[in-house]
Length: 229
Image (cartoon, rainbow, N blue to C red; front, top):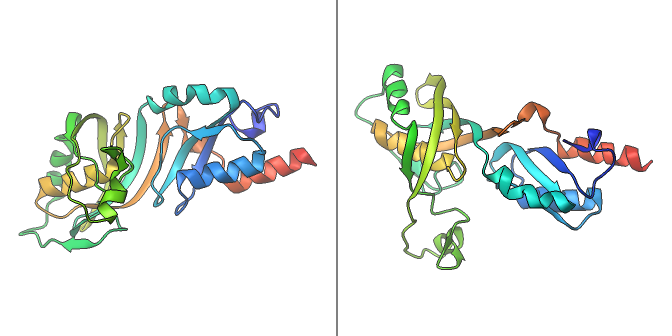
């Protein structure tokens, strides 16, 4: 639900937010705390600053449902560049250009993508919020510390090629919680013997909560101001 059909119950509500690019998930929380004038608020799953799309935000008593939302499957549309690897596995990091022996065909792309469907072992990006010995991995990475990211089992329910024109491919992914699409981009590149880093990412759904049901922060603020008046 969102503000428009919440019966003005901003204190105990669920908001499906369309996170804009360059905002952190905590930026959204801080902004909404000011808009709604509430203290108890949290989100159900971080989106990277360069990512857009569905962010579920809970207020008041509904924050008890956050873990339920986090356990729901996620859907994404991702754009991947195959010419390089990135230290961050996305466009923010330093790139290491890769010159493949040949350009993969669309048929090879499709066949490779299908190898990732099912239960897979994934290594999260070193620039992530995962804690290593009590510290965030990205903080250790920024200090140039040497450490190993722990592997994790995740599930790719479905992966579909949307478009492919060298060196860029766009895919739709349905996956379990804990899946890093940045890692998937890197691993796809490795499997293709090319580079692979994420250039665009939109989360299109968390369980039944889809992007077309989401509301922008600007719209949320306008609706709240209307109700105050």
